Each structure stands twice: as structure tokens, then as C-alpha cells.
Figure (cartoon, rainbow, N blue to C red):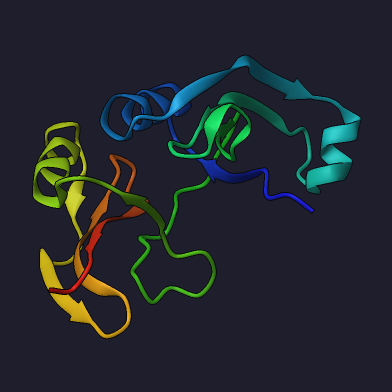
Length: 150
């Protein structure tokens, strides 16, 4: 068994893919998708489904590592704002060298803070530096850095 991807439904897949590429180091995995047809209606249980988008390779997994599948439906619904305690998948996490610097890049690219910048020693793990932020469409991202305890 192998983990392959996580799907993220976007309002504007091109803008969101560009954000994950420029700010978080993801790489596009062609081809762009333009999917529709009875097969997709059956698979998704969405009438007249039309999906466009692309996969972006998540950093750290090499050339065959998992991807973030950023798709947009032809007609979408407004998303409810997510919070860190929303049931279901809550966030995607990236290990970064400098949490504050990366968070500022997120903010400059249209993201927002969700929580506060936090540093905490976790027994058996190390010193965790983290910040929950959101991408430009409100999806939660955890930026983290773990250093061995001294």
C-alpha cells in the first residue's frame, strides 16, 4: 500500500496551485486535468460534474512522493470556514526551516493567521515551533519546525 494524494477543492485552482508552488515549494505534476462525463458523475455522485485542476508534488517525498490534487468543480458551493477542531481532515502540515518567515510569505501571498505563533517543548519530541495559518482560500496549514531538546 502507498499513500498517493490528498484532494483539495478550490474556488480558483490556478491561483491556489500557484500559492502552493511559490510559497511552500510544491511542484506541478502535469497534465492539467479537464474531466467530465457520465463516468465522473457516477464516481462523484455529482450531476454534470466538471473538474479542472492539477496535482502538485508535496516537498520532501522525492519524484514519486504524494501530491496535493487541487481541483475545481465547474459550479461550486461556498465552503464553510474551517477551524482546527472541525471534524474531518483539519489541516496539512509542512516542516519549514523558519516558521515566522514562512508564515510572513503566506500572509504576503493572501493567507491569514489562524492561531498564534507558538513554541513549546514536547517531551520525547523536542522543541516544537508552530503556527496555524490559512492559504488564500481559507484551508488550514500548519507550519512547523521541530528541534531536539537541549
